[in-house]
Length: 278
Length: 351
Image (cartoon, rainbow over all chains, first blue to last red; front, side, top):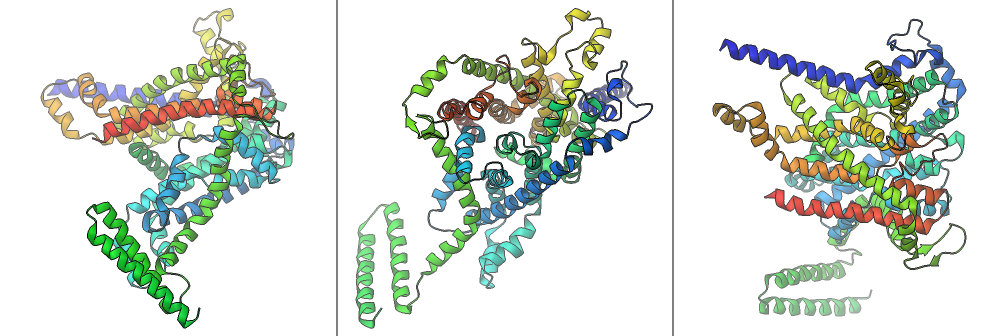
C-alpha cells in the first residue's frame, strides 16, 4: 500500500510539472509582450531576458494614443462589435424561435437555405460580396462590416438547437392562456435561453473584435479603421518601435480578456456543445 | 363580394372538399392520404374564410407571424450571404475587372489557374500547412485534454490559460511572435538556441527563410488554436464511462494500456470530428500567413502563399474577379469534399 502511495505521489508531481511547463509555454508570449511594453526599444532584445524592467516605462502607454489615432480605432471597433453582437443575438434568436417552435409553409425549404451555406466558407464568396456591397455604395463603410457579420447561419443553428430542448408544452400552455407568439418569445423563451445567448454573445464578440480580413478588404480610410487593422498599420509603419507596438498589442487584448474571463464558462460550453453534436 | 358570389364560391369549395373526401376513401397509400387530409383542412379553412368574410385563414395568419420572426435574419442572410454565394459560382466562368462589362469565358479561368505558378504554390502550401497542422494540433490538444481532465488543483485556471491564445487578437500575438522569432541572432528564441549551443550561422531565420517559414506558421497555429480543440476533447473525455477504467484497473492495466484500449477507441468520434474541423479551418487559413510572412506591405512570397491569399491578391490587388472566383471554387470543392466525408462519418458514428 505504501509503495503505491509513493508512486502515486511521483505521478502527481510529474503531472504538476507537465502542467506548469504547459502553462509556461502558453503564457510566455503574453508575459514577454507585457514586459516589452514597459521597455525602451533598445532594451527589448537584451539577453538574458529582463522579465521585470528596472525602470518600467509607463510612458509607452501614453505615447501610443498620440502616435496613432488609437482612440478612433477603439471607438470604431466598439461601435461595430456592439451593433453586430446586438443584431446577431436579436435576429437569430427571433428566427430560431420560428424554426424551432412554429409550423409554417416552406419551413423546411427556408431552413435548407441556411444548411446549404454551412459548407461554403466566407472566403469563397467574399469577392462577389464585396462587389455587391460596392454597388450598394457600402465599401469603405462600417455598415458593410456590420452586414457581413450580423446575419450568420451559425447563430440561427445554435439558438434553434437550444430552443428545441425546451418542451413544446410550455409554449402550448402559454398559447392556451392567450399569449401571442411575440409574448411567448419575449416572456418565456428569451429568459430561458440566457446560457445560449451568452455563448452566442461571446462568440460574436470575439469574432467581430478580432476580425481582420473583413475590415482589410472594406475599410480604406484611416479614420474608419478598426483596432486590428490600425494595429497592423502601426506595426508596418513603425516596425522598430518595439515598446510601443507591444503596448498597443496589450491594449488590443484587454477587452477580449475581460469578456472572455467573465463569460468563459459559456464559451467552453459552447465549444463543447457544437463539438460533440457536430 | 356580394352574397351571390359568396354562395357560389362556397358551393364550389364544398364540392371540392367532397371530391377530396371521396379520393381519400379510395386511396390506399398513407402518404397520399396525409396529403389529401391536409388539402381538406385548407379547403375547409377557405370555406370558413369566405363565410365569415375574413381576409386571411388562420393558417395564413400563423404563417405571417412565423415569417415576421424569420424575416429580420433571413433578409440579411439572403442578401449578404445567399446572393453572393450564387454570384460566386457564376463569376468563376466570367471575366470581370469590376468596371467594364462582365464577359463569359467558359473554363478559361480554370485553365489559366492550373498554369499559374502562384496558384500551384498556394495549393501545395495549403496542403502542406494542413498536413503539418492537423496531426500536430490533434496530438497536442489530446495530450492537453488528458492532463487537464485529471483531478488537479487549479484545473480551471489551467484550462483558461490554455484557451486564452485562441481568443487573443491575432494581430497582437503575431506581433509578439514576430519579435520572439526574429530572424536576427538577437531574437529571443534564437538567443536561447545560441546559448544552447547552436552556432550563429546555423540559427534558423524563421519567417525570413523560405525553408522555415511554413514550419514557423504551423508552430504558431498549433500554439494559438490547440486550446479550442482541447475543449472539444475534454467534452469527449467526460463522455467516457468511468466504469471502463475501473474494470481495466482491476484487470491490472497500466496507464498506457488504459489509453490505448479505452480512451483512444472511445474518443474516435471526437477525433474524427476534430480532424474534420481542423482540416476545413486549415484550408481557410489566411490571416496567420499575412501577419507572419507578409512584409510591411503585406505581400507574401510564393514560399508561404496559401489559397485564400491567392484569392485576395488576384481579386483586390489585380482585380481579376472572375479568376479569383475560380480559385474560390477550388477552395469550395476542397471544403465540400471534407464536409461529405463528415456526413458519411456522422452516419457511421451515430450508431
